Image 1 (cartoon, helix red, strand yellow):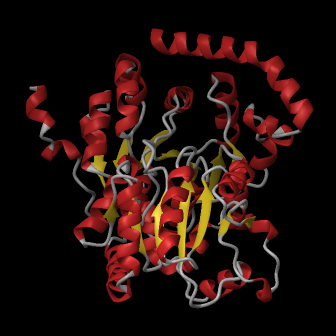
Image 2 (cartoon, one colour; image 1 turned 180 degrees about the horizontal axis):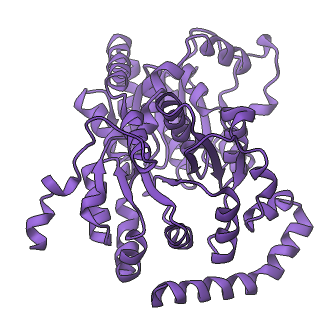
Length: 453
């Protein structure tokens, strides 16, 4: 145990003791997470009894819905390459847990991840005893990594990414992060930029490799043509209705989208806008904002199931997990969190449906996805509300060009599949299974190597 890790244990333990009375009051008042508090504290014995007997045993931590989809594509590959392995999946959010249970069914246990406190992590790891502990994307938890290393459990950061917005905070903690990252056996990063940032945080370069983004695997096949007619029926949309779907919007962004929509409707009064906020609890407030703009509005769950009613001018989604299918009805898709400086949302989801895609200037969290689209001349970046309005009107004035734009986007998605296989190979190697032609460590071609010398 290092001095910095000892300090981390003490600080997090004291913080937990200080906050625990408030946590208990919150749970008593709301009942939220109460049934699963035991799992968060590391008591996963009941899950252990449901674990398949196969080996190696692989524990994959997927925070929420997006990471669960990545986990699903990787698990599918692992089961083909290591049919005797057993898998357990942990999540952090209730929506992630629900999604994982639906995705994996009864054969793969799903639990809430233990809090990153030494005693909680120790208890969970002793109960599950994984051979390999896998963290997805940016999940770097000191107690998990230190305790797993102490127990001889192999660890990996898979489909890893380090955003531009978070790197400065990590660098300020570099002495501690270097010790934490030294406990990780393999880093499988999405982009070269992610690898560079990780190494500047203190990761051992010989353990870092680049294998692409598994989040994009399976998108093309998931875009089922039979979904669109059903979604149009649910939303009371006719086949010819033109729609803008604004996906995963964030606070402060809806007002800008509505401003653009009002201007668009001056030329196209029958245009329908569907807003899917990133946090559905904001849906009622967004509806009120829409009405203040003089527009009719309805929540997704309150759309009358009668075709005679016709589509409302604006639909605000108040359901979770439907956005991918909602993109099927889009004439134009807008990726949220991009007009505000929050890193954007995945533009390849609407691309998989063959939709024209527009996004704002802030797409830092999806640089690889925007690069794929822009290289294919299939993604449109706008600087603000005025350009958003202009580009949407321009696209809708030339439907042939709009359709061609969507087809290029769909083709771009189909050409960038296969990262799940490379990510799964990293796990397979850590599990002691033979992998043909293992990739070289990134250090062999690392431009930072000379700089360090």
